[in-house]
Image (cartoon, rainbow, N blue to C red; front, side):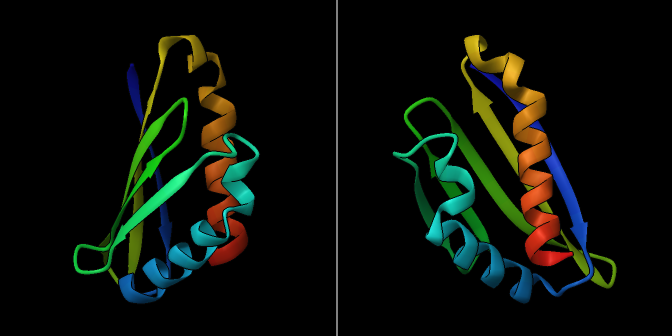
Length: 101
């Protein structure tokens, strides 16, 4: 397994950002195209989420950054899927921009 990180900064509070991400990931529409067996486990107190699919794992955190917040996603992929790293990064960033600006 190989890891890479995707970061995205938004102008919303950490609470608003985490609440929005929780709704989006619970609906699952954006990530199910990568893995239909995806499961998300949220922790509201730490504003984090563990995402598990059949082929990957990811840890998402929302942290305070200046007047807004920063979303950090550490994705753990098998070496065979590393050629899709760019597409996954692009899709995550696109999802965050769509729902959070």
